[in-house]
Length: 327
Length: 304
Image 1: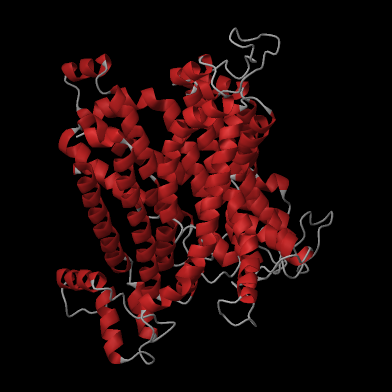
Image 2 (image 1 turned 180 degrees about the vertical axis):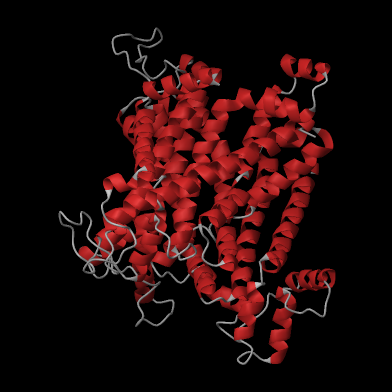
């Protein structure tokens, strides 16, 4: 219990740090770029909205910094994240809502697949130490992990989209299709998701495989595995119930964390494929100098990671008795 | 110091992965130091017909502005290596100081530094980089190094802290304390040198991520659009729709360069992992021997 409370405390401290960072970043920059940007919108945005944004970004010189800060914390806590300038007059929270499901679908499914496949390959590679898979997969995956994943996406567009014309490579669905829960619409969504998902899968699977293989190699050296062999247990039982079950623990924490990174984890893939998710929206906000939307998205991405870490900590406390006895 | 260099040299020569990585890295360093030897053309001069295909005069063709793609790739090596070594070394150094100081000082300072490290660690790095770079507007080399250093030290700091914690009760540190040395001296002269292989591995990881992050930022147009760098080449290829219009090389060449340099760091790093953890080293099979229990092949169990 004390452990969970401590982790919850950490969650709050980090959340506060992220919000504070968000508050100070535009104010720290020379000439406050947000103020310069707001000057451009002065005619188009109504006076009241502009005043609210000025408070958010520190363009309001009538208030002292501490007062601005307290106001800012209050606004963020009550869900008032400002108004998007590009999608004016939609509030930031509403604009974000339109993008998040695309990202959750694409990156979420891919993250789970990458974890399952990567861990599986890692188990087999470590079990057949020195075998064909073990001699090919690790060096190959070391190299694929060094390739910029957006570039893999570009190459996929070139090969499968432009040359072979197998799959669509831009947007989240056919522009002509009407969004609805029909089979044909879901079909085009799936089609559009295939290439970005594949590009993401190929570049993320390596880390899971390598860490799982290395954990597994270390676990296989343990005495209890040798004991299981000496008892003459079935190899599959030793492999999964004795070795893999223990070796997967560090990977599980990593997996829980990567669930948090789903929201902001594939920014460049979304950008390359014009996929209408959170990452693409973040880059568009940057391009349009829509700073309220940009900061809102950054906050959302951070909160997603923090919540995932907190849940992972709670899960660890439940499943790993050592965390309960320590301190 | 010389001794540890020799040790690293020998370790690199022994591992095939490390040898390949070291050769690749050496090749890029030579390209960065003497670009003029390899490319005749200026990387920025818009001197040629636009969008030429590959030929003997222009090995990789020309860009949409009539610049030589090969010359750009060669001259771009310099900036990316500056970022890799600059930000990689700086963040490893900061990580070492913070991580080791936390472990050595203990108590209150450990709590504070450790909390600070953890907070920086969990704030999503790439979105933060994007936000900072968006406010800065077209970051040059110096700004990129500063931003990457500021955001990239936390993972290494945590690693080094746990390593330093295991050293804390050793006799040579107790001896230094009894001699009355100051904490700063003990941290930099007594503790850090014992972690040299860990520091090298951390540097290699950081350098790899700095290359990838810097190129990504330049790719989305947050770098300096006039600088010659691989990420900027990709940015122009993307905004000129090089893929859609059939000028593939403008996008393939810089991406392949990033991947090769990244692979150099990754291969070296993987080899260092094997040096640090002997259990991970490749197993050489001995087929003829058999295991006393049940006659299974030894190869699988040699390191078990």
